[in-house]
Picture 1: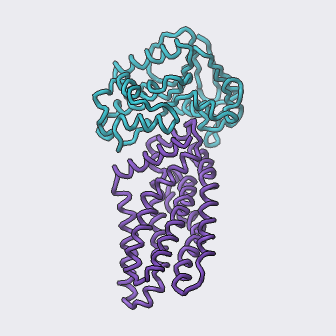
Picture 2: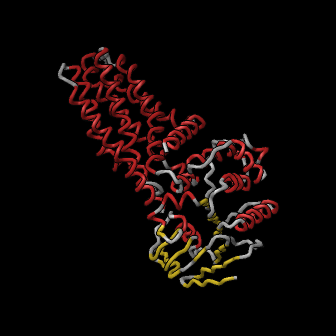
Picture 3: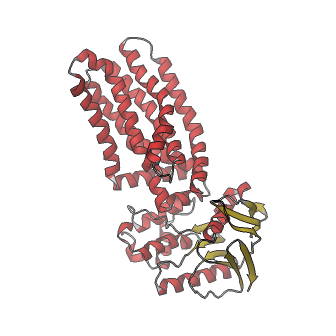
Length: 214
Length: 222
């Protein structure tokens, strides 16, 4: 269970949003929308603990994430704007190193399976420098599939640079992750239909934020 | 927990091997500075013996500063640093791993090269051994102190100059006692005190710096 209390964000002396109360329960999906520059990425970074909230707090299972960083991070996979892919490493090395540094399993068979899930199996030993933008994105997304026990996914524009097939596969993966009783928070400008039972939609617009249950 | 330390070291060494030019640049700089000095000041053996320790130590220090920006900047740019901050493992351990890897590709080769430079500057074996030992103790301190400078200036424009300004004053004690130990050995004074101080610097920075760097990185990445 992830929730925020009176969350506010100020960037460069401009209040992006304030008084945001969100609650993401197990088995639900939260979609954050809004025009450019309204603080969607800042909100997601706050949910991960990368950015200190200006006001309010982010809580994981009812406790402020700052007081239980390890427990919160163990349960979280964050895919941001940056792919976190090293140009000089091969695809499989990238995935392995990312998982190892995160303190997660590096079982070779499971990593290979994760690469298959993002349709990169045949590029396993390709240096990341030679990959296209969409393929790099898929290397980053492979972390979602390699980490099977993280109940919270926070995804910032996950569909960027993906082809139609990739978009479909990822939206299915999100739906099944939520269906299994996990949580997904994501931002997207694309019109992607994700079939889940509990779906929330938050629109951040200017300094006023409005939430709606769907 | 220790496995993450080893994994980070392995990762950074692998990256250093794949991107050799960075490492070679630093070492080449060190070699050039040290070998040019005798040509500049003349081949008088007594003079060379006197300046040897200072020259090697100053060159090592500058080479370390030269290599600092790549400690975190690349990881910051491609997003892997962000992922390190989201690791469930202690960030200070990851930072310690990165500092150790940095030492393995800069400090350690510099230390080994100093054996040859002892000959170049006509030092006797005893003084050369002291020079190498002082570098072995002192260069990890340079990597550890440097990491705090690199972390604090992450993402700033002109960060390189600022890093030098931040880090240089902290390097001075290491330089004084590092070079001082060799000169003490040459003039026959006891060197124990110098090495105890260098060892104390190393322990102090190894304990405190990873923690301070972790805090600095969390601030920088906001």
